[in-house]
Image 1 (cartoon, rainbow, N blue to C red):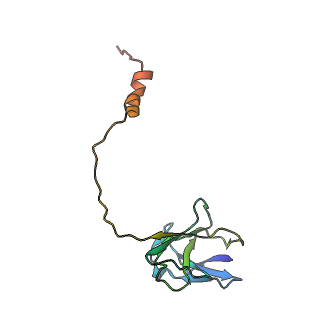
Image 2: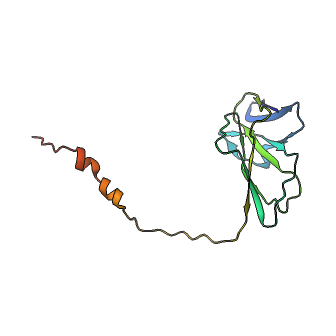
Image 3: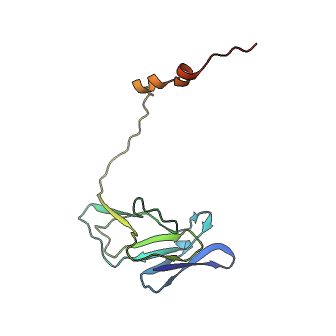
Length: 153
């Protein structure tokens, strides 16, 4: 698919148009009014052609694949309760540049990670700082190894 950013009315905002595909929809800025890269942007949504269903108590983290850094667009991570969501998931993202973005067939788009939901409580503790033996050996290493005492008169 190809995404075309088009400036709208001189405002720092871009409208995403699609070309030769029916698998992309628009997601207006008003639906998620967050400035990205200092700009108000509209989002695109990739329509999934499949339904993701997990056992009861499971959700899915949907995000851009690890270590597939794409300078052209960014997906917005989300958690979806796929045990109860009964529609194909639309994956939102935004264009990072002002140039048309052509995403070739076979390009990794999204990573979907299922996980079990559990109820739990977070307890944060502060521990007194404890120095390890290794830290102790290297503490003041510059002073102990490299420093030369100087006398200024």
